[in-house]
Amino acid sequence: MKCFEGVHAEDLDVRPFKFSHKLMGHPALSLANLGEALPALPKDQVFYSSGVLAKDDDFDRAHLDKKNGLSLEKTIETIRTSDSYIMVRSPEAHKSFQDLHRELKADVEELMHGRGIKGEIEGSMLYLFIASPNSVTPFHIDRYSTFLFQFAGAKEVTVFPPCDDRVVPAATAEGFMAQSGARPVWKPELESLGECFKFKPGEAIHIPFISGHHVKNGASDVSISMSIIFNTPQTMALSRAMLFNHKLRRALKPVGIAPRAVGSADWRDMTKAQLWATAAKARHLIRGKRN
Image (tube, rainbow, N blue to C red; front, top):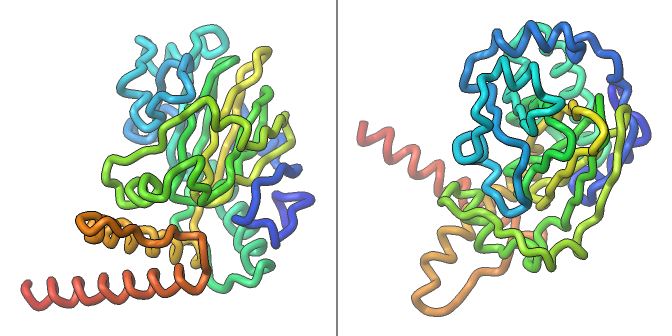
């Protein structure tokens, strides 16, 4: 593998782990290239906000609800002192990041195949994060798996077990997957259930699919990190099972019955995923005939 070091395929989407990466000094991540690439990207791919966030803030709305009162250019210029947070979605839209994206995608697929999962990863995308010292990424879950690479500054990432009802109730996770407006609620008593990883430039972390996590940047320097997000055929199947559960849970609520949570039995999850896929295909065929 070109980008990873010390990664065990059997741990992919099973548990979080820290490892070393080989991307330090990559030309795409030089300050000169960032200064050229970021302003060239579409404005709807570059989000920035105050970095003074709490663990229970809504991360998805931070750029709307927690504005820092500065322009993007001023935010970049004063990032060391302005308590700000910049997130760039799909920097690979700029040609300078495209080779890096391809290399990372190939490495992830090699890991996936090493775990015995056939096929290709789906929906892979890069995210770039530039944040002032002490910035916080609030507690949240994602609809994908993540590898997060550190390039400057220090960071602490606390990751919680996936599919753990104590951390994120199954109904909340299913609603989040269905984009119903549901999102996990942070409670301080959850902290003891997480595993805290401290890492520095040259190190990285894997955050498994649907694992809750929050991030705190170090106090001494601006943090620059980048992630690749993706789904495997297995996590796509789990997503479909969660969508099935979301519908079923709503249907059964009047009679006081709740479906078994996804993650409790592989055979049950795969059956639900197949039922959801079959129903989606039937809906598609019906819409096609109507049109």
